[in-house]
Length: 267
Image (cartoon, rainbow, N blue to C red; front, side, top):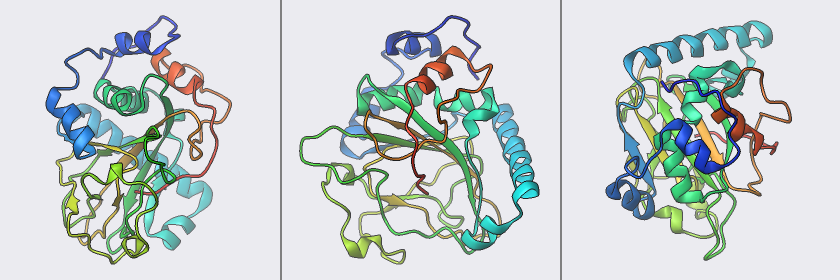
């Protein structure tokens, strides 16, 4: 995990210096994949210790949430979920301020990027299948991209346990995905499964067509979903107007430019 920074950050160049982004953080191949395919799958961004800590905190927060609210959401959606993880400390701050993620977000969104939110999801066995969608409203030709989504695998992502499916290259499309592709049972001939070991990050242009798939296993497929957005993005975040006490300067900067409150997407 990153080391704690003590100086206030006032612009994106200072942010990148603080978290350790440099001109080698994204390779030429990384940039080409983001431009042409719309995504990166990066193994090993969470080391073993960090991964175990995140799993433990995911379960602790989930148990706390269910104690307070019951299991209604789990019973009705088939998904265990914990929201607004930005309020729960450095374990999660180091996700949304990770150098690789921020470099990719800047490559897609430009300098004026904002943090949109981070949440935890775990589709239960037999659940998780969605229709293809993007995480942004329809984009007009030639207009900038508005969102970068990243999924951080707390368990292995496999074709059996509900790994996210992606349709490479569809981030360049304008308008909504065709109606038939938005049906959960639709199979797209170009779709791939984002198969990746635990500790990996799947970073993609949020305009890319994607969806969760059915967890056909008997186990968990826990993940963290994080978004970074451009100004004017109409969905997300649960940060609200109050930044939690004690956050790092990098996290504070990213949160301070993100005063957008709206709905949440699934993945």
